[in-house]
Image (cartoon, rainbow over all chains, first blue to last red; front, side):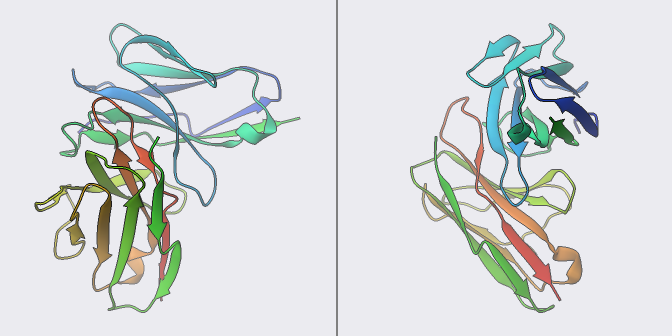
Length: 113
Length: 114
């Protein structure tokens, strides 16, 4: 069973870059790494997904080292509205369950003025 | 990306009763999943809802307690049977459009058992 761990919480200020790391030592060959943002009373919202190296979209970057045993979500210039819980998910949706879809423990990001 | 709607959004139920949660997707999807999220905690996969066949359950979850249906490529239901206070949680549905696409989630059903 993959064990996926994240820091419990992080604090930042508006305009700063925030990097949240996820550790997934037991990642399998076919597994993707996906990051989600969750606000209270809402479902997780997709941020970014990657398999290896670096992926960038309009809201974030995802850095994955060669051994793929960790990943880092980078949020440039955060604002108050980025205050949320961030989850990494490791797994392969095509093969579905069998303990192959494992959410991280979640990181509560708090952004202040 | 697919838009996922869940009904009901919340409910308060008596112990010993059952509740069926519906998940509707606005487009055909290949995979659908059901998760549980207890307050302040991460998400735990309950099962994969297979279209036209029995769901695939994760360790710790059984069909008698959480029967799942998926009659077509856009709809699934999860029933929480013979509820007890320990079943109080948020139940979330997710869907994958295909290939290596990510899961997208509904906003969940908040269930409280008295």
